[in-house]
Structure formats: structure tokens, C-alpha cells
Image: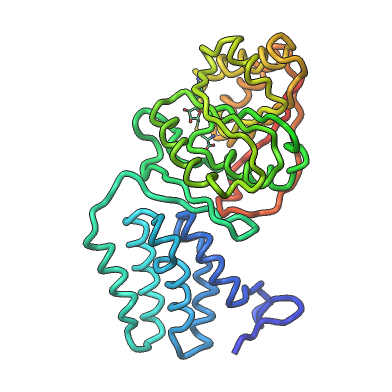
Length: 335
Ligand SMILES: C[S@@+](CC[C@H](N)C(=O)[O-])C[C@H]1O[C@@H](n2cnc3c(N)ncnc32)[C@H](O)[C@@H]1O
């Protein structure tokens, strides 16, 4: 029996309780994005388990995660699935019900398989559509931070989902695209004219192209023109920028290293000072503020280059699972 109050959603203990479907959905969303295991609603699962004598909910969670077609095609890392299944088995054993063979079979399969450097993270959009990206298991590899999706990209994607009007009929340039989540979400959700993904790192550009072709071909219902350019902030020519003629420029997590700030600000200054673009583009940058000194240095460099900024305080609907305690700031830069 579910003791959740139908109006308040709170249980007899006064805490907010998820419904059974919400619990299952939350497991699915977190599993495919490879969230930390402590981000899963284990307490809610425990409560569900206590109120029933069957293994149904565990079975449903298994179907929506490890046995789901998305997982069969684009699986999270083996290590992650091992840890997830081990925890799920632990919770199931609390039921003291008959062992669920299918759980042990799923664990057996991931125990035998060979670990790989690349795995898939899948981000579920509000429409239910999935964006599955090939990402490196290691956060930094091959000398770049660009082979994984960072939290600022998740925030910028959520912001873009709420502000599709800002991209309508626009040519959008993304700087430091990494493996592409933000651009893919913008292309899937907005009626753009053109989206230009860019980065400077060869392996990142290669992975970016693969992810775009997996996620946008035949899915991009808005049929914007999409391209990937090698664009190094330090070496980009006026000709390349003039050819691009972006109306809107966006970037996520590009302010993380004091050594790259000057080059980024010089590029923003060229883009905004009216010499390479006929119109001043709108520039939005989302950053995780890990080191306040590095971030302050970025803002000071902007000021010294004659660029002003305003902090965007819009609250956005939570679509993707990530640590909301992270300090993420989004600014609009203008002259
Ligand atoms: C922390 S990652 C962020 C990737 C992606 N935007 C995200 O948030 O998931 C920084 C990205 O900036 C790119 N980058 C760093 N310096 C660059 C430069 N000088 N020119 C172009 N891209 C650069 C890196 O290759 C990397 O993909």
C-alpha cells in the first residue's frame, strides 16, 4: 500500500515521497546519464520495497535500465553497470524474496566483458527523446577535457530548451563544443538557420562528428544546416570568422584554465567589435566556477577588452541529472 498523501505527495513521516513511476523514471534518467549512485532515489525504492512482497519494482527498474534497448545499443560503462547492479541486488536481497535470476545474469554478463575507454551517456529530453553520446570514461584523456560532457553544458542545454525563441532563424556558433551535447540539444529543439560546432582538438572534433551523425541525422526535425569547424581561438583568421557570420555565440565550460582565457577574450573581442561581423552577435557563456580567481580573471580580461557582461539569473527547469550544488554562472557578453 502506498501511504503517500494524494494532495501533498508527502508520506506519514511528512517527507516528500516519489510515486512508483517517478522512482522508476528517476532510476532510468540517472542510470543513462551515469550519475553518481548516491544521486539515485534509493530511499524511495526501499520504501516501495517495504510496501510490497514482490520483486516487481526491481524487475521494472532492470527493464528500464540494463535491459532497455538504449542500454543494449549505447551502454554506460561496464564498471558503472557493475556497481549499479551490485547495489540493486543488495536492495533486492533486503526483500528476502526469491532470488531474481535475471539480476544475477545481468551482473554475470558485465563481469565477463572487457572494459573499454569509451562508453555512452544518454540524456533524455523532455519529449522523451534520447541523446546518446560516445564519451570517454576518463574525465581527462588524450590531453583534453573535451571528451566528456561537463555540467555547464547540461545547464546551457536546459537554458536553451527554455529559450528556443533566441535561436529561431539564427546562425549559431558554439565555441569549444567538446563532444556536442549543447549543440545537439539546440538543434533538436530550436528552428535555427545554421549551427556551427567548433573545437580545436583533433580527437574531440572526430568524436564530435560521430556523435552529431548518430544524434542528428534524420532526427533533426527542424532541418537546420549543421557543420563542424576546426576553430582555435588563438589562430582563427578574420576570413573564417567573416564566413561564419554568427548571430549568436554560445559556449559551455570554456573558462577553466588561466592559460586559455586571454585567447578566448581576444576572440570574443574580435567577434563583438564589429570588424568581422556586420551585426554584433549575442554571446552567452555558461561556466562552472571551480576556481573563483580564474573566473574573476576572465571577467577582468573582458573588462580590459572593453567587453561588458551581465549575469543571467534565469532559473531553468531541471531536465538533466547533475549536481545542482555546483556553482554554474551564465553571462551575456556585449560591447
Ligand atoms: C571543459 S571542455 C568543455 C566541452 C563542452 N563545451 C562541455 O561543456 O561539455 C573545454 C573545451 O574547450 C576546447 N578548447 C580549449 N582551448 C581551446 C582553444 N584554444 N580553441 C578552441 N577550443 C578550445 C577543448 O578542446 C574542450 O573541448
